[in-house]
Image 1 (tube, rainbow, N blue to C red):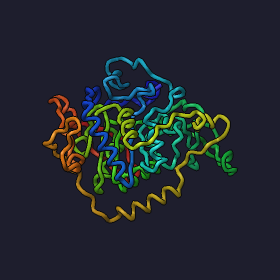
Image 2 (tube, rainbow, N blue to C red; image 1 turned 135 degrees about the vertical axis):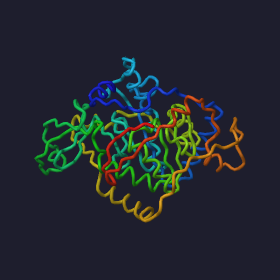
Image 3 (cartoon, rainbow, N blue to C red; image 1 turned 60 degrees about the vertical axis):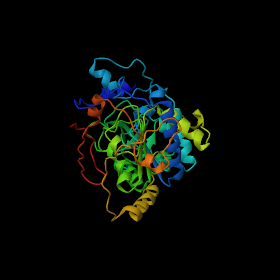
Image 4 (tube, one colour; image 1 turned 30 degrees about the vertical axis):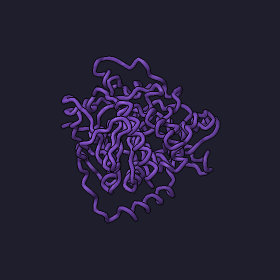
Length: 378
């Protein structure tokens, strides 16, 4: 099904760096880094998690740029062997952990680049989620801009009209003469204004941003986590492939995100919930209309917090982190743990991979919230 979505997009030659070899931390380093991540989460007051396609691969949905990703294989004239439909895919352990961390007030917001609807299926509320690239299970009215949950994935992508009348009257009793269209972005589309604003405001006020399962190549989504760093917060990146922001992160973890978060939950002593089909809004949408619009009150609340903390404050420059000369092995950690958090644990990167990491992306800002997706390589 991911392949069908990818095939529905307009032709686009520059899809970023593809097929970069994956790397894995040793179990000793993994355990130490997960301890540090759990500590960062516990100490933070406002945590934002940025999710990419890598968190859905364990649900059977292929990613795009890994060695077995959709676009990597496309270049070879192949398709992924395993491709679970969006209908049959269920939330992964990562999706359920993130929902639990939100409920426990350990995570304040989630910014997703995924269109698979798995955050929606997990039962995560709309007030805690920005969907930057759309959702296969959501329609939006062209006139009133309200969004509604579908019981089946959209048949089109690229913000095309379905011709179906707006469902506002079924939800609020107020009729609307608009027509519904899909919200899945094509390459040339600007990001949804409200979702982008929420993602940016939350990232600015956050003292910790965590990137999970994303190579951070699509602009401007990939640079939103850096807003946290610009205002003095910390950045953690968890991904199997190197990303262009690894050298700006305070901590990088190279391992499966399900395993990373499972270890973190164990350290935090928080139980991991199992997926419950009855809590899936998509299932409920078969018998009742469910609205999925961002509430203006939630926007005003975070905008006020952003103005109080960030308005008029000069942003810090995002500096490249110097490698720590102290290597972590097993449970041996330097006496000053803050140094390990601030300075990435020493890693051995091959010459080929280090060259791939140097992917320069130019940011084209149209205005504060109306920014188009773009990939440019150095």
